[in-house]
Image (cartoon, rainbow, N blue to C red; front, side):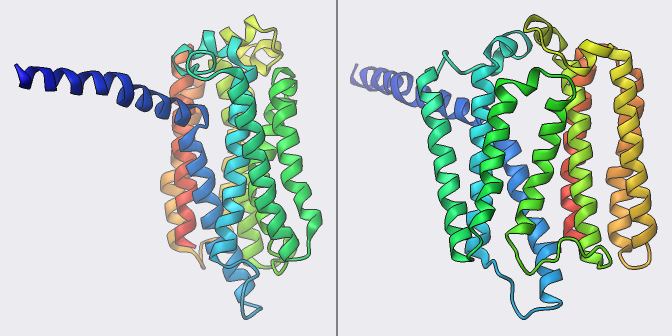
Length: 323
């Protein structure tokens, strides 16, 4: 009898405390798009350690950023991105209820007031971190980069997400800005010296991030066309039609592949391993994605295309290890 009662108590404890905690933790990870935050963290770390730092050390004895400063800056970027995802879901409840009902956590698990407080606190923490770095290196104007990111993410969520083209363009710009802002905070990195190999590689990855993000945003718009219609959004597939949206995606895929071909040509004799990796695990998958876009006919197809683009992006990030 006592064994039965102990088992019952353990079951009640799990149901009352452990299970709700696990559900909340899962909801938090969903809300802040934890895998996407890892993408940002890994990308910024690799771009700095594989491109920016070696370029600086080729001319100077040391970099401005140590490991602790780099971690602080990356954490600042990650917190701003997390706050952006949170506020985006706050204003997108009506769309997500139709497109992704399983992902909706606001009002089911978290109250609206909690979401707003979390958004403000995350941004304040990020600004404090960036402000400390800017003050330390006597470049206070650089705080404007983080403030610009926060402002654009908020305006995107409230207004521009529902506008034609500008919403997609804004997210692509912000994704590229995560790399450009990192370069601005390293004053010894000559961002516009395009004759140097390190700067050329840096801009290749910036353009890659910009283009592949723009492509994926249009793909997601086609995937979410049902919910966007209910909220009177003016996305590319809703204004021009899905066929025209597919053609635009294919055009940007071709532009991205041309960028990679120029990169292969310039790096073939100096970075053969990098060229081979990009050719095998980024360029060839892009051709396959192009084929899938041409054949796609429904929302499920575009969902898988979006996932393939995410994997392709991650492999592009990993290629930094070969520089």
